[in-house]
Amino acid sequence: MMELINTLISTMMSNQVSIPLAEPILELLRDIPLVGEMIALILWRPIFAALICPGLTVGGILLLFFPWIERKLCGRIQWRVGPHEIVWWLGGLIQILADTLRFLFQEVIVHKDAHKHYFLQFPFLSFIAFLLPLLFIPAGNIVAIESPYAIQIMLALICLFPVFILGLGWASNSRFSFIGTVREAFMYFAYEVSFIIAILAMIVLYGTSDMVSIVDKQSIWGIALNPIAALAFFIAAAMATSRLPFEIAEADQEVAAGPHVEYSGIAFGLIYVMCYEKAYVLSGLMTVLFLGGGSAPYIPVITDLLAPLLGDLWGAMWFVLKTIIVMTTLFVLRTIYPRYRLDQGLSIGWGAMLGLSVIALALSLALVAGGVIVI
Amino acid sequence: MKKVMVPDQSTGEKVIRHAAAIGVTMKESVYPLTATVFYPKERKKMPDNLRGYLMFDLDKCISCWQCAFICPANAIRMKEAPNNRYYPTVDYGKCIFCHFCIDSCSGGALMSTKIHDVAYKDMDEMVTLTEEMIEPPEIIREDKKTVEYVIDKKDLHLKRRKEVDTLLVENIPPVEIPMVSQCVDRGSCLACRVCERVCESGAVSSSTENGIIRMKIDTEKCTGCGLCVKECSMQILRLVRK
Image (cartoon, each protein chain N blue to C red):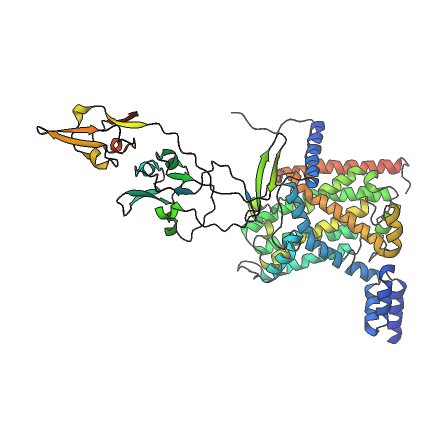
């Protein structure tokens, strides 16, 4: 038994995340019996990736503050103010925290026609589709699972999102949520094909679907190599997150909240953050595929000063920074374009975007075959 | 019938338009214009001729009823005061703030203010009595700044000044056109003496000579309020310029 624990600890100790800045404190804590082991566990690379960055902690913080960033920024662009009254001297920073608290204490109403078990389970299960893909995204040197099929597994997990949305729309068993569900299903098929082809173009270009080696291979960022694929991926991500201008499924003005119309309380809160979860996962994927993942550009004084201090966190920080930029761009789209109708959305998905992604694939093939890029 | 179609644009034009839209967004995210006024903390500067809450000057009122007659929403009712004169009361539940009453007031007794944020607890309270209209309503002022909307050649922007705007405006008394009541068809007069009774200034008088009643309008005393014109049963009285 003791041998097993010792092996485990030695395995953990051999693969620790190094943060030189926090080393003095960690050194002190390691001497305390149980706390030391716990720190060793948390700092173990796979666990650190799953729990802290890019996993649960960073994801949770983004979910808590990103809606605020979005609302504040969009408000600014549209000549409004955005959240303001809650902690006005911070500009309404904890608005989402306040909303979450309100949702937590609100009654979750399950109406009598709903399929009770599915109705309550799907909002919580949709967290799986958010957390599992994060295991494959490398934030700098930190990655939970390194696999040669990382992108394929991620795609499969990302494709679970619409399944949960369709499921909860179906479990609601109400005509309004059915309308929203059908609209969601239409859009799902419209973007999914071109989304996958766009990723395929990048896999062809890099010659691997291992995320870590994809990041290593990007001496030139993917967006410069194949901008068309980046554009197709970006539009598909905008469709997948179902925010404006592709907020077709849950169009507030016409079909209320689409599939979520029957939800209330914390169940609604979980569904409300679902598109932000999806945006985080897709932006992470976009950062890895097109923006060089956690590779940091060289900035004269700052890099020399901070990179040795932060150690592994330096790359992770750049990854999160790039992800936030991609997410912001994704959400600022709502201020530029009005919402498309369902038929327009479908024609964009099956027409222009499919064309774009096929052109992107052809471009990748041409680049590889022409020997411009050596895999 | 003309059908509304999507404008026919080439791909180049479309790209330019998309780029322009993105450019505007970028510009606004860095240097935005804001149209929001944080209302209780600051107030928008209203123009002096804003149609707001009504105020009343008792001394100038000649009880001519013109405000009550002209009110399209029937919000103004005349109530008898202890001095046997009639003064207006305003029901703000009905008032549509057209300010016809102010325009029609011959003595300039009704006045406009810039007050536009008065709250009532119930409908009965909205009937504002004459004595409540003499003083401006009590307002708790939380504002420290005055915001002015400035529309220049380029765009709209807000100008914030650290001052408290006075909500009472100086009312310019109306330019009086001296009018006088005149009988245009003496032959049709019934001598019902309604005009004599309604006249507030005592300009109309009657005299009996040989059993014939003669009505007389004193042009010096007549204020031109038009009450007799309104009340004349034969409609033979007119207001004419003095």
